Amino acid sequence: MSRCYLRYWAGWQLSLPLMSLLLSSIVTGCNNQASSPPPAPQVETVASPSDRSKVVTTFLPMYWFTKAVAGEAAQVEILVPPGTEVHEYQATPANVQAIATADVLVKNGLGLEEFLEDTVKNAGNSKLKQVEASQGIKPVTEISPVEETTSEEEHGHGHEHAEGNPHVWLDPVLAQKQVNNIRDGLIAADPQNKATYTTNAANYIQQLQALDREFRQRLQKYPNCTFVTFHDAYPYLAQRYKLKQVAVVEIPEDQLSPQDIQRAIAAVKKYNVKAVFGEPGTDNRLLKNLSQDLNLTFRPLDPLETGETNPQYYFTAMKANLKSLEAGCQ
Ligand SMILES: [Zn+2]
Image (tube, rainbow, N blue to C red; front, side, top):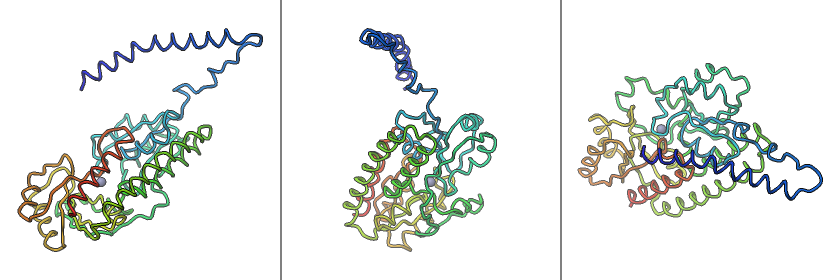
């Protein structure tokens, strides 16, 4: 991977002289064509990378949606590294620096980004415009049963959902609302690029609508399909497609304790559970054994809190989720 990166970097360095050669030949060509009046310095009116708005986003889904809307019209950065858990994230000095020099900050809201409170204060950026992607979305506090582990109480993590469940990006319909909010925020901060933001947002929303249709079509065969997860991430998705999530919540979410497994067994017995879903990357051996013992299917379900930075990755991961849900609910 690092070798690829080096090669890419070398390519970039090589291409710089080539690019300036190309640019100067274009400019020369223009000069030759323009006869009497001196050519207008058009190049100066085009925003150079440093003139673009700087937009910082909190975690991956906010980065995808913002990058999809901004395209190349703004400089988009991410605060929480793509492989890092957002729920327990601790801000770094680099994050404070990034916010201090940003024009816009895009966040999910609904209490997800607890690390922002002090970080924004410490950045002391009075011109910073904040965009809350979940604005206007009615949060749910209790759609699905949540079987909390004792360790959660010990960690005092009950505050996470004080403002409602934050995982709205996992519903392709609510994701459209988030994209619209981000579009409006970018336009308010940078009206010059309104046309670009509007077109880009419309294209991404069209994809989200197609994804929603696909989810509806393929999941309508399994009304009230009840599944167990180990992250209370899917109440909006379940509500949208008439499924039922029973969440067994353990923080940190990447390690399952024997108590979690006991909770899961109890939940499976209590509710009419069809499938058990674990997160990609978790230690699933225990869960696989558990599912086999209970005669249930076990599949991965991705909360999309980690992954690749390409905005199209949302669709890749969501289609994989659809496949898992379909297979689990059969
Ligand atoms: Zn989460």
